[in-house]
Structure formats: C-alpha cells, structure tokens
Length: 256
Image (tube, rainbow, N blue to C red; front, side):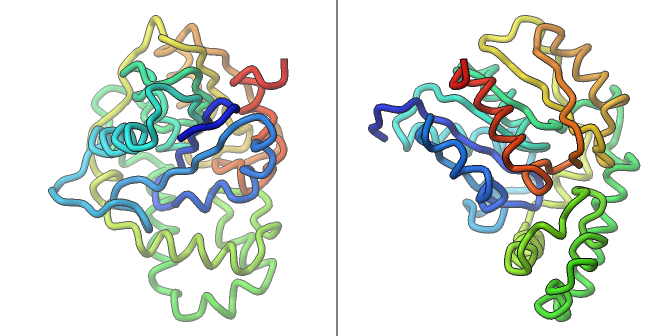
C-alpha cells in the first residue's frame, strides 16, 4: 500500500461489514488513504476455520490484513466490536492512533455477555432472521427502517432501502454471532496506551450505555480522551456520518 497520505483502517461492529462505513469513507479520503476491513466470520470476511471464535481471533485476522497491506502501523477507527479490536491492535503496537466509537469489551468482571444490550442485539437478530423474505419490500418504508434498527440507531430512516437491506444481509451472513455474544471475554486495562486513544461514546447508545460501559472504559483506559457524541445511537455511522468523520479526523490529527 503506497500513498502520500497516512493510512486509516476502519473496523466495523458485530454482524456488520466494511459497508458500515460507506457514508463516512468519502469524508475521510482527502486526509487519509482509507481501508475498511471486514472481520473474520462476517459477511465478506475470511471464513472461520476453528470454533469457538474469540475476539483474539478477529484481531489476529485484522493484523494479518495490516501485514498484507504492508502497514506496520496505521491510524485505526472502530465501532463497537471494531473499537475493541482497534484497542487490542494498539496494545500490539500496530496503531498510530485509535478512535473507538462506543467500543465493546467494557463490562464488569465475570460478566457472561448476557447484558440488556446483548439481549437487544439477539432480539434484533431473531427478528431479522424471521422476516428475511419480507425485507426487500418492507425496508422501502422509512418507518420500518427506523423501528427495525431502533436499538442501534436513532435515525435509521436516513439509510436508503438498499443500505438497510445490505445491513440485514450482513447480519444473516455473519457466522460468528453466537460465539461472540456468548463468551466471557472483555477488554483488559490499558494504563499506559502506546498511542493516542479517543473513546467517543454515543450519547443515546442503547446497547452499551455511556453511564455504565463508558464509565468502565474510562476506568480501564484512564489516559484516553473521552467524549460524548450528541444525537447518535450505538452505530453513529448510521445517524451522523459527518460527526463520525470529524471525530476520527480530530483523533488522527488531520484537523489540527
């Protein structure tokens, strides 16, 4: 990967794919060479070769992708599971900076993952599976898009019907949902980060609450810059791509 612009690698959340960044990427390319990766076991990503799959396996796969791109280090931005992965890559010395948008992995010790947020995700997954034959028609309705994705976004109706359908297809094509939502993994403390880290929490996150998971994140990475993103839900790329782009660029130093 050869470019005059610094590399920026984007990492999506669980059940999603690189397409989650499609409205954000054009807002970043003036400053960075942008690559959006699709995680192991997700729709369009590398297939799983062993079970159960752990977050470490996804991080290993992402690190191999950096190697394939010829990137020893890069600026990293990730949402939810992708934010967790970005922090773990930073721990391995692969990040110039990290912008973690409502990152997963911050819950109390001994938690099994069966939190209220995970229950909401499981409900959304079940409904998507049950209604998959109706989705090509139903998702043309703005109200259906808004209600169907209400747990992860406040303004899902701003997505086009095709974008909403692609998100549903990504969910149905994810083969590692049960592995990732049903284990006891969590993010270990990182007292002295090897690069600048921004923890940017969605103000209206209904999956990982800012007052709960966000507070744990601040305790475990006390030197990170913490901020609240107004007006957005758990997947802020859906609600406000411009806000997400500005937050990432502020972290990478492109706006200074």
